[in-house]
Length: 498
Image (cartoon, helix red, strand yellow):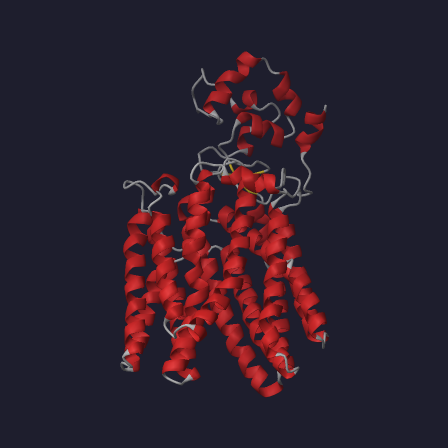
């Protein structure tokens, strides 16, 4: 299992930007709980604390996609260096305002600015992986590893923040946030060798939003449902343990949930899968909905812990598949924007789920909270099932410019490729792409290059999408070796065995 991860981390510069990105992502899991604990302690108001935290989330949700679009256009370092600096300075403003008991308006203003300029550094890390990996399997493993890191960050971050804020000083959590944002953020952005390329100055500016695509709307809606489910689970588990008189166990149960997701992410990313991406995604959402439903039927700590652990096994794989679907749905130069929209949808969902579950817990106890979990999960599944046509279409998209050897295997032409004389293959392997020159009698036709394949079946041009082929540099990490037939089999396997 470790060989897959060793393979991607041995790529020059990979472990450095992944580690830097991991550090830079910790503030996401620390800042919210730190603000709540600090404000509730110094201002003695949980209502104000919740409003300040919500201001940060809403501000992030509104402006993160805008920052991501600028990043895709002008580059990560050029946009995010000043952005991270502004965010950090605003957090310092929050600390100073709270320390001197400034008017509440200052807390709102500085919090809003900090959230608006924080950006989604996790999406930028995934964009770097897409830029440097060489095969779909490597990208699949990289996305799996980053999702596992996300789980670790969100599992340990709140614990660290709570210990520092309650045991050291009310400001300690936000101070740690500033240190990690500067250290990890600046280190990541300084690594220019792995930074994805931007569009050329002469290229036309992108028009419209990537969210105009039906599949992106569907994925974002699913993420809102998933976020609502996660937010409701947090509130419901706390209420459940409090009702049993063991509120201190709530952190352990949530850690078990995250631990199951972490383990599943590692296992899922360690191998390649021969099923079409859309089937993996739908199956993961279905399993997640079923597991979430079971949480309301157990009345013991052990029972809920076991159910949460098993349910967690579908979380990371589902998140990995969403990132992979986005990678295939949006143009390469707008990938950061697409991934950031997913992060924004997740944050919006968490806020909605927490708010609704909190109200239901006040009215009906922990059973009301788990009802929000169930409704969110099945809403997410319903959206997924309705969106299957868009998911299937996106899952089958491939890039047209492919290495000749890779294309021949994908089309089941392994024997033809292997029997061709070496002299005939030299030029094709050197160019690593298919050339179609209309009207040039000296240039071989597509039919000559790929016997049995009609030229009209393939759109010419570097960005044309076709079915049944996989670009090792731009394809997603679903691990499928062939999806043209939709059955998850590889027509080239028999040829290679022969």
